[in-house]
Length: 129
Image (cartoon, rainbow, N blue to C red; front, side):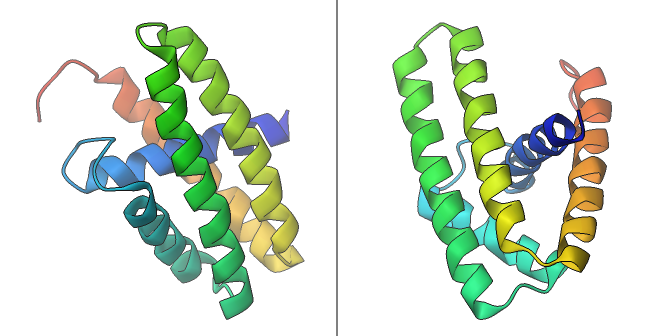
C-alpha cells in the first residue's frame, strides 16, 4: 500500500512540475521536464552527481514513454492513465533503489506532500484561479 502511495505521489509530482511551468502538463520537451524534475529532486534529496545522472535518465525515459502513451491512447483516457500509473510505479522503484536510507525517508515524505497537493488541487478542478 505504501508503495502505491509513493508511486501515485511521483506521478502527481511530475504533473505538478509541469503545471508549475505555465499550467500546461505538456510544457516543454521530455528533456526539459526531466531536467527540471531532477533539479527539484537534487535540491530536496541532496543527490550526488552520479545519482543526478541516473535520476535524470530515469525521468527522461519516463517522460518520453508518457508522451508516447498519450499519443497511443487517443481518446481512451483510462488506458492512458493505466499506462502512466504503471510507468510511475516502475520509475518510482528505480529512483528509490538509487537512494540511501535518509534520502528514501525524505523522498517518501516529499511524495506524500505532492500527493496531498494533487488531491487538494483535484478537488477544485474546473475552476479558474
